[in-house]
Each structure stands twice: as structure tokens, then as C-alpha cells.
Image (cartoon, rainbow, N blue to C red; front, side, top):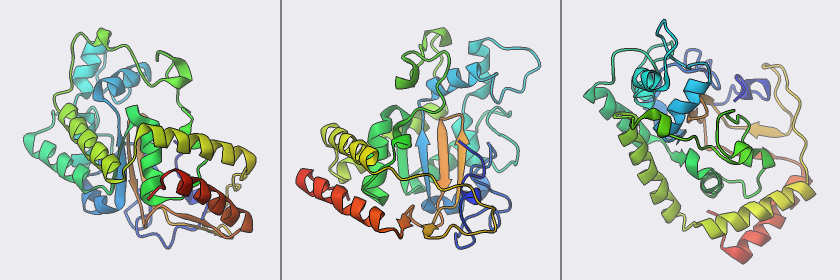
Amino acid sequence: MQHDFWETRGDLSRCAFTSATLGGYKSPPGHKGFGSYAAAAKKGATVLRRPEQRVISGFHDGFHSYHGKDEPDLPAYAAAVEGCAVRMLARKQKGSPCGAAPAPTPAEEAAARKTLEAFQFVGITEEWDLTVCLWHATFGPKTCHPSEFTNTRVGAAAEGGADSHEYDEAPLDGFRDRFDGPLYDRAAQLFWAAVAKKDLDREFCDDWKAACLKHAAEHPTPEPPPRPRAEATPGIEVLIGSCLASLSAVVFCVVGAQLMVRRRRRSAVADEIEMESFLQREQGLG
């Protein structure tokens, strides 16, 4: 995920949660603790990854967040970064709390769960396509961009290449994250409850994705060029605040308003109408 992505593409002065209003909390800000911003969670979103998969990914990413002096093996690394998501949600330190001692306390576990439950959107990395479908059903728009379904950070050791997020967990020797495991389980409960509330299923979301990608191929929209931070992007209102990414595993997005991009171009309006007709035929998002 590119740092300062939205700051380079539009004027965010109207957003309630930007680096200017949150003491340097950028999009994404790196890996600092989210605890100082927990009160803003109700305007945020998160996507969680299975903890054991995230641990293996971090191990192959140069022992990400490991603060030991000696090069660890995988079980030692896993023990050091156990509870990464809980620490990031609960702690307020400016540096990365992911591998910082001590281990999460019961109070921090409770705080992390409370923040998780306050987010207006919770997704699951292992259910990426369904997560994208749920996002559009929740916030719109009904059209999509192919990049939303592209694995842009494929791990060299992952099985299945770009089409898979999965690592073989056998080398962990039975390790299970005692802190992030329950947090992930709660995230999964929230995710599936939201899927059910929107009356979504895999078949519908697969059909929507196919139609959406076909539509995007037939009506390509060029990416706007990066602009200076002080210069607004004509014709587009981007009501987005900040994002925090943790190793393609945990993503927190603090949204200044509901994530909506309103393009004032006739072609975009026509695109919406065309996708709307498909959705009305099938079932409808939202």
C-alpha cells in the first residue's frame, strides 16, 4: 500500500480525519499504534488476516517487526510477534508496537476487541472477493476497478502464487496466536453477520464480480495523475481520511465520511446506470 496515497490525489482538508487533524496520522501511517485514535473507530474500517498466515508472511519479509539481535527461526519469530493486531489496536506508541514487549495484557485484549467492534466495516483477507463485494454493498459504488481484486504483494513463499494468500503452516510447529486468534475469530463473526445482513452469497458476488470486471474492461477509467497536496482534484470529491496497513494483514482506514467517489463526468453516470440494470436483474447491492 502506497503511503500518502490520498494526500497526493486530492484536497483532504474537508475530511474529518487527516494527518493535519490527527497529529500526523497519514494514509497509511506505517505501523504505529491505533490506540490514540480508538475514539474514531466508528468512522473506520479494518480487514484482518488469519494470524498464523500473517506471522509467516512477516517472517519472509525480513523478520518484520522483530526486535531481537539474532536471526530467528520461524517458531521464535512467531513467539516474538504474537499478538501483533491486539497491540496495534490497543497501544498508543508512535513506533511499531507489533513486536514490542511486553505481551498484550487482558485489558489490551478487551480494548482491541472494543475497537474492532466499533469499526463500521470489518473484512477478512481469506475471503477477499466476498470482502470487496460486501464493501461495495455497504458503501458503493456499484461499479468496481480491476485493481480491487489484484494481489499486489505476492509472497515469494506463498503456495499458489498470485492467486493465493496461503502459506503452509506446518513449519510453525503447532503455534497458534493466543491473542490475535480470538480477535480474528470475532472479526470473522462480524464479517459473516454483515454478509448475511446484506443478503449476499458467493454465487451472487461471483456474478457481480464477473459483470463488474467486464464492465470495467469495456469502460476503462484512467487513473488521475498525482497532484500536489495543496491542489484539489477537479471533478472528484474524495471523502477519505487515513489508512494504516500492517503487512497486507491488518488494514485500518479512518474515513472522514462514507467512502464515496463522486465523478462528475457523464460517462461515470452512464456506467452507474449500466451496472444498476445488471444488479436489478440479479438481486441488487445495498
